[in-house]
Length: 157
Image (cartoon, rainbow, N blue to C red; front, side):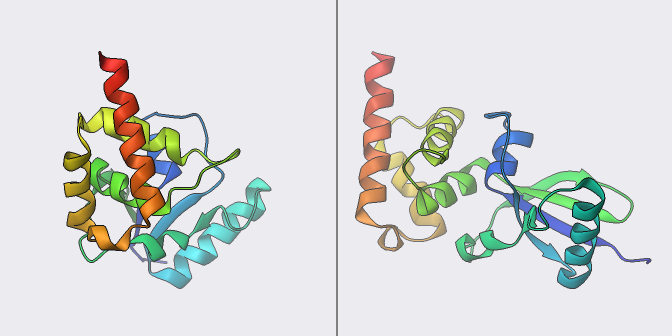
């Protein structure tokens, strides 16, 4: 087709492939272009592999900020794959944080706090503010983040 595509991955795919923080994810959250051609290719892969045709989705676009930090991950002849860096992942995971069985957001945030060496709520809040502004986060998500950092501090003692 003589087309060069670009996929910027985030979410569980980054937690699995880049950080090896967990074993699996249900789908690949990404921003991609050219949108139509990448969608068509993803459908062909799903049919060939017998998997959900939503395995590659752009649901993450609702969590992208004006300041996005994606770094190179994989360079192929017709496809460039970028991935969200750890700071951006922390901001996105806190924005999207879901609590309950079947969700791994809390564990992902714990991992990212360790990976980034964050020891205080103020350090984490500064990162979140850089990407979305603290006003964009629901109070319960900021409270959960504070609890995770306090829990981390108690373990360190």
